[in-house]
Image (cartoon, rainbow, N blue to C red; front, side, top):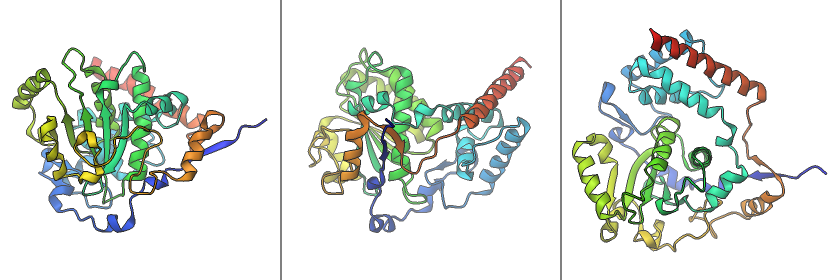
Length: 339
């Protein structure tokens, strides 16, 4: 008997139109600084400056030279993000693009596989509320991070799938293109701190979700982590450190400079009850947090084939072509390295 298909429709995560209409960004938020020091938060429905366009053209020359066929849904903003990830340097573009296309070619990065869903049900990463500019808030509980329970591959797959949902349904081009990240360290000492898992998450976000981070709160640090952080802060790039804020529990009220108390869980100094159900993602702005449709779909996932609402998976032929391109790019890179 043919299995019933389940549609996962996350439209309920979208913000209300009146909230979207109220968002106004000043020029310094959209983009600040010039040339190779530029920092950009908004990528869609905004003009690019002359230097960015010049570097985008340089990037496309490298694409043409290496006979790379970009995905059909590739946009100018994708090109610009690769330019930023490559730090505006021609020598970096091929490596960055190779990494990104390889990531795009892995189906499990975009599908609700059993293991991806099992990961998301644990509460290792989840969403809760929005900040005062309607940016979604992503929480990561470092106490639950365990590479022995889930492999590095699963971390990349599950995080990619989840971040993709948030980006597609919680973002609004030109208005909301960033998220706020709360990383709860649970006072883990340096010996238990999951540095490797954090590195995996960071690497996944830097290239494949470039420009999405607006603010990172590192909460409840141990004494050893606080001391180490002070040393890192003294030598780290000022622009990067501006996005990161380490807070002890008695300082959680500072989070409310950006996030209203009713959008924060009680454990972070807010008024919203601590979440106990982490999948599917919740929208606390609607009654009950979920639609009946998504709850029924998730309930039936155990016995049915899962498909994504409005998503068209790549064909086997497309995936083979992409893998072939990646192989050629690797050969070209190795040849260049030999030179």
